[in-house]
Length: 158
Ligand code: DQA
Image (cartoon, rainbow, N blue to C red; front, side, top):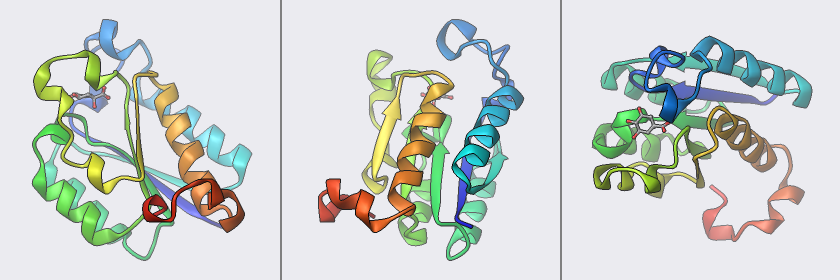
């Protein structure tokens, strides 16, 4: 069975009580439940991990190399600051989809820069908790069969 790792960055453990007008009312546990339900429906294994610590996320990405088939990551604030996470993603060479609950391009200037986006296959931003499902769906599409990736330019498949 294929395996997808979903990584949540800092402060996402506070979802449900954190700036609800931006991030919605669902808790992280509720979002994870939806993620697991989707994985079950499609037939892949999913591991979910959240950390507030940059180094822990880096270690998790390093450990994923050769073990997981794809990653969906919401690096949260580290999106805009972490060269370490970007480098870990580049080294892991795992097909990765970056996701954000909010549309980072509709917000403050500093959020419009993502250091990790150039390493990702693609970015999904602005659909609330559904961003994770869209991201998982894209990741699954890519790993579940070469046939399906024919719609992607070769340069951007991995
Ligand atoms: C976020 C957007 C980031 O700018 C912010 O720091 C977050 C969450 C999102 O999911 O919309 O913590 O990644």
